[in-house]
Image (cartoon, rainbow, N blue to C red; front, side):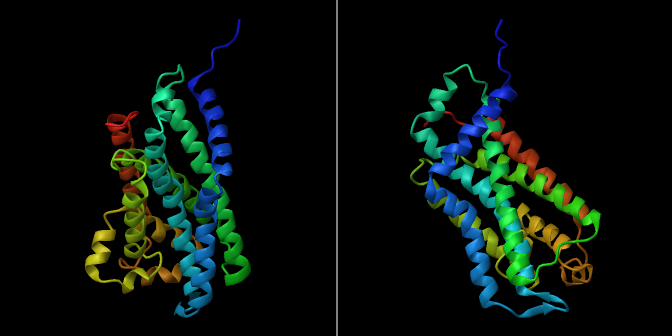
Amino acid sequence: MNKIPTAVSLGLRRGGLEIRQFVRQRESVVFTLLFPVILLLIFGSIFKDTIAPGVTFSQYFVAGMIASGLVNTGFQALAITIPLERDFGALKRLRGTPMPASSYFIGKAILVSVSTLIQILMLLGFGVIFFGVEMPSDPTKWLTFTWLVLLGSTSSTALGIAFSIVPKSGRGASAVVSPIVIILQFFSGVFLVFTQLPTWMQQLAAIFPLKWLTQGIRSVFLPDSFATQEVARSWENEKTFVILLLWLAIGIYFSVRKFKWERD
């Protein structure tokens, strides 16, 4: 008797299909994986100032780009591609098959995980080779980095799926999603030193997860002495954990309750 595939096994197969489809779309590969590296090379080459003892802007920027990469591969990519799949009728056809809905989302999560891993390795590699980023020697910092990446990636994935209901069409999805991500990058200390931003920008950014992700990643790759340069004079990693967990819960709630398989 043939064994009936489980939702997880189907999700793993779906993940493999998602990766193959992604690789075939050269524009998506360049924008998702190479664009952050290109920005790192541009900004890192232009801004070489020391922003604190032993910390250059390039080192600061690497941490911001890693955090921003989690948002790009999770939130932005899914919030744009899912409406396109909905427009093409792909979601409607999938919904009509015996495949559980959870398998579709597992496949998306696998794609995000693989893209995130590749992007992090590329950013760290270029950061070490060209901009003198030092890898942490303290195991606790790598533990912090691990939960930041896992929690940041899962929350971005859940929020991207949830936000995919907002664009009215796949064609207009990029115009809706991309400006939001770019604004959050400026507000959250990715392109600029966070404490140099106006107070109202800092307060607005503190509502959203990207600010906390960038701050958390800085706690891993910048010296502990730099914590005094943060707004709260500390890394606030416990607060970061709680806020990311809260956004993950929000993303899961709206993904489950509001997700659309067909166009209105």
